[in-house]
Image (cartoon, rainbow, N blue to C red):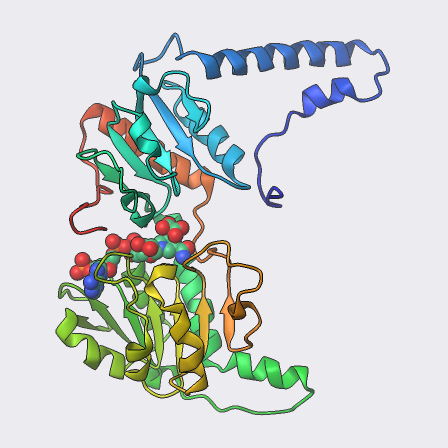
Length: 366
Ligand code: NDP
Ligand code: OXD
């Protein structure tokens, strides 16, 4: 995959300069020497635990694939100088690995590290870790949260709720036909928006939507008070919540209880022509039920950020259905600069035996 345009991962421009048409000037020679010494230091650092390590014999392994892998590695290594950080496939001594910082680790892969002190999810969801049938038992699992992730999700939810509220998909389609159609939408105060999941992200999204003037309700497992948001709790309250959700937003974690929750029965319980935004997990949606629900008019439009199989296959019907907007799991893609800082801080807290907020409850699944 190509590096993302905003990826600030340093490139080895000094070394490259020595390889380009040399004019034989001393500055290039000096740059070459500095580059060579730097490369040797990096190689030594990757091969051996740091001799000045505050935690000798302790290391961290990183599993991130795709365009941001180098960026994550550079940031994590820079922020944890006291402990070597190895890419997944370059760990010299698996017995020394205490921290596994992962996104979608291969099943069984974490078993390679018998002395793990924690598994850290690069992201707020931990379903990609818990799904491993060979997950080492009893190792604490941390998720990564923080202001950056929450802010990005608030933006995504505000953007797409406003689009659905203001009938943007229909207006764009009309404009493409050169059709001057005026659609009068209700005022925000009469637009009922429902948020499934009122955790870190769902409650922030609900507050943001309430701040925009929408009539917001939220659904969670447990009752709580949220200013300007009507809260429904538990399975028994789900029908009443759905009945009042003209735009339904899913920000649930994927667990045994929530898998497949966005299904034909649920769509039929929404006000006719409802909008759907799924930024939780692909496993929440029964994919086969979506297009029939759009055809039947239970739904008018769906915005999907997450899919059962990611990347979404090229021939998947969701790509071409004009009633479905696909975003490539970018609703709140954590930025490695911020994410690595939060993860390094949590690792330091673990090493110091300090309390950590981001521990999940494996029995609950989130
Ligand atoms: P939290 O763990 O903070 O909150 C989860 C919420 O879901 C809680 O309010 C919880 O209820 C509720 N919940 C869980 N199970 C049920 C259930 N069976 N019935 C009703 N409510 C339930 O999660 P976050 O807000 O941090 O994140 C939510 C999810 O968003 C993540 O798990 C991940 O899947 C997804 N995500 C997607 C991203 C993207 O870019 N698309 C980015 C980040 C996260 P209670 O409060 O009562 O426990
Ligand atoms: C997450 C995600 O869980 O990016 O943070 O989906």
